[in-house]
Amino acid sequence: MFCEKMKWVHVFYVSILVSPIFAEWNTRDYVRREHSLTKPYQGSGMSVPYWDFLGSTIVTSNYVRLTPDLQSKSGAIWNTVPCHTRNWELQVQFKVHGRGKDLFGDGFAIWYVRDRMHPGPVFGSKDYFTGLAIILDTYSNHNGAHNHQHPYISAMISNGTLHYDHDRDGTHTQISGCEAKFRNYNHDTHISIMYRDDVLTVSTDLDGKNAWKECLRVENVQLPTGYYFGASATTGDLSDNHDIIAVKMYELDLLETVSIVRFRLPINLQVDFQKPF
Image 1: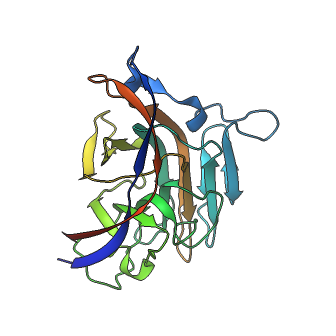
Image 2: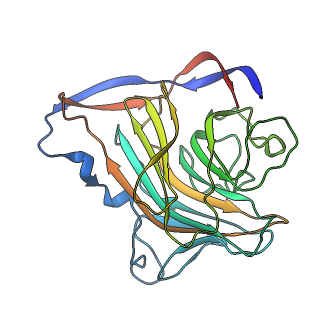
């Protein structure tokens, strides 16, 4: 079991009260179109409303392919609208597949970060990012002790000072994770990233049964508003097709109490924690 105690700077917040708003409908079922990506993808010409593309990304009638099953490719999609929703759920339908039977890679990441459209070494996006990354890693680099198999899903939060170490599969900076065999299925595969009341919950539907299975749940995760959603992927010596089929973002407002509109401003707070991976 790999266990490391570390100090890091957590993204905290200051809440600024703007105005009270009483919930008038079940906003848990409210899809925010400006943060979603569904078929048909095309807008006018070759553009897709609310989304920008980077690198090897191609748009077809059935999927958005971040990378083809070829070596040394990198691609990304980025939402053009910052998210000012306090509580949200992002559901992503995806497909990772390729010709490799035993060796394949590298995987992809789903982002909620301050800076968009920055290619880099962390599954196609920048290192030392500020925000949240949900990483779906298909290849184990084996250079460091950990007790899980791949494919593997992990969560990482950074304030811009943390380095994602591929040689250690990111184990020293993840806040939680789970094994998840999500590759080379013929049926649809989905991941849900829910952020509500400072609790981050990641669930998967990988068996084609329309049922969520919890992967990880972490409390006291305090993220600012105004960051951007995105997804990126990369291949190296090994490769896979990394496809995004759909992205749906749901606004989650608590119905039991009066909903308060709050904007979060990041400040620095030292946090000690210890967690085995």
